Amino acid sequence: MESQKLTNRLNRIQGQIEAIKKNLDSTEAHDCEETIQLLKAVRGALQKFGEAYIQAYTKECISSINDPIQMKQKYDEILQSALEL
Image 1 (tube, rainbow, N blue to C red):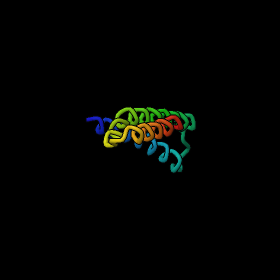
Image 2: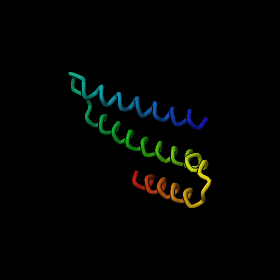
Image 3: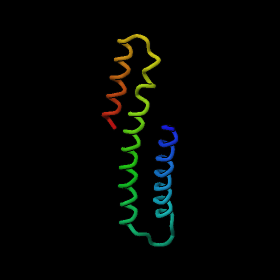
């Protein structure tokens, strides 16, 4: 269920990116403000997607590690990567 929600988010983002591309490729004049709004929407949606992905899959990424020290190291790596988003 969670992966379907994440896929749906990506599909919406893809649609917004396609709209930006359509504006750029159009031979007709396009609304620059609309394109900027789409860019802002994509940026925000990607941020929220990243947060949702991290929340949903952090446990899954470390659950197969049996050694507590390695588990902590992997968790710290994931956390550091997440903070760099």
